[in-house]
Image (tube, rainbow, N blue to C red; front, side, top):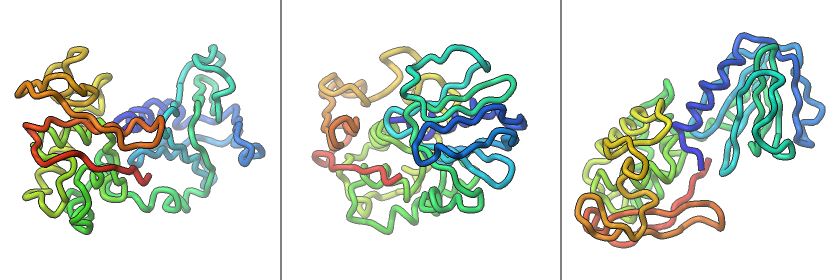
Length: 268
């Protein structure tokens, strides 16, 4: 599943449309089939947690969410698509570039109504509204929730996904199953999560170990059964998501004592 840094990077790619007039607007979702934004100027695209908001003149916003498989490809206008046409949900094209949303979840709404789709989110780790104290306050409201689950709840803080959750908890020495109320310094955990995602937002490959090489860049994620890079204990892995959801939690039982992980949910 794309995480906040992927979405932030996607917004930067979509910025090539900003300031330009749409010469083509093709929504391939039945509920949006009659929407036509041709002739309108794209103002900007911003990310909000795992959501994208493409604002168009006239007070209209194209809201998209990448979910598990979604992706926006941005390429020269008229160039061949890199993915099967049947996966395309929307095409936004200017005189120079085309942006094709493949397998994205879409809706079009008034810009003034954006809170209807993103207003529930907590502070955005990569946004101008980032507020560490507010994120901690929201986490503290559910002291009995396992920390791994709480960090994935986008209503607490927006942008962390399964990879960052696993890596952040390892670096903090905390078991995913540890209750939020039992964490001695939530502020320290949240601050580290913010530093990790900011440090990686411009990278092609996420790095938490300090080693930017294939197979060496992460501490525990996707390393189930392999030795911990720090102590040698086999990394534990447990799947908590529905089929195909890729919600496997990874942790080191020695470096992160406290028992098995508990299920997590994204909530946005």
